[in-house]
Length: 140
Figure 1: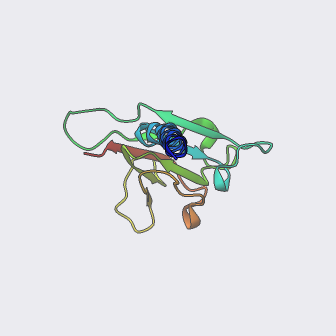
Figure 2 (figure 1 turned 30 degrees about the vertical axis):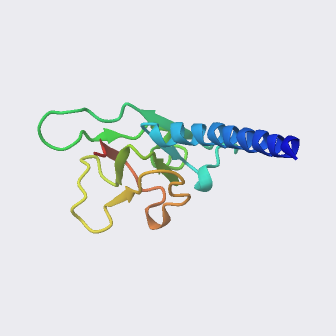
C-alpha cells in the first residue's frame, strides 16, 4: 500500500516538474520584446520570395513626444517582394503599422494596431501589403 502511494507521489512530482519546464519557454516568448512581420499570411516564410523579419530594439525609452517612427525593412516594403501580410507584437510591445512615411494615423484606415502578445495577426485583412512604417512603445 505504502509503495503504491510512494509511486503515485513520485509520478505526480515528475508531472509537475515537466509542466514547469513546458511552461517556461512560453514565458520567454511572452517576455520577448520584438515585432515579427512576414510577407505571407500565417507567418509562412518557407516559400520562394517570402520574407520574415524579427525587429528588436524598436523603441527609444524616455524623451518627449511620441515613440519614433521607423520605416519597414527593405524586404518587407510594399512590392519588395510584397509587403507585410502577417504581424505579431509580443506582449511587452504595443505596435501600430502605418500606410504613410510619417506614422500619421489620423485618416480612417491609415493605420492598423497589432494586438500585443501571441498569437498575433495571421492576416492583416484590408491592410495587407499596405504598411510603410511602424511605431511601437512598451506597455506598462
